[in-house]
Length: 219
Image (tube, rainbow, N blue to C red):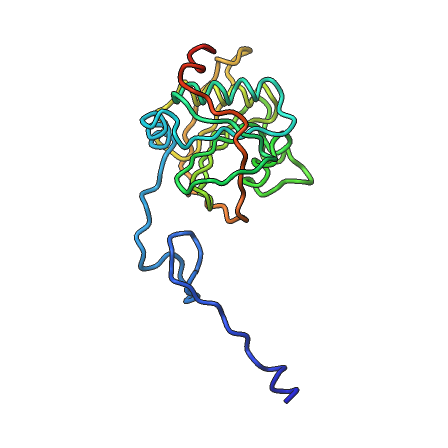
């Protein structure tokens, strides 16, 4: 009886295959036999958000976000015609079609750390001075768009680049400073595979729902 217990092979929990980058039915293949949605780009995501005037869009900032991050996320929300803002440390139910825009790198925003692999030991890893990043992720809740840089100025530059460049035909773009002012930069499209983030269910509490009238008053 004891030998039987030792050599008993545990059962594998099989599920119906889904388009999520996982081998759900445990047959050694990923996403086989299912129709995956067309890969989205920054252009398509921004276009959808503008068409819906920011409906389902949440700008997520860090607990100790600086003024540059706050200005950046409100500017992005304003450019979309509406949306909401939320603190990354608070909670609320998230919809499947929701687009969250995460402002700030892992040092400033725990949500960015989650998307990038939770860089607790070195939150600046992968970032360079005078460069920003705009990167789209597919998550359990829907889509996450990271706008970040090594420091507050680089993050602000990336936010401005996203506002001024809505026709980026890739899921990732690098923003490179070309001068001493935030408006002086170049945007380089990066053709990289779509990044799928597998994570526990995360929720947010809306801190502020911005109306179109309020946003007009800020501009």
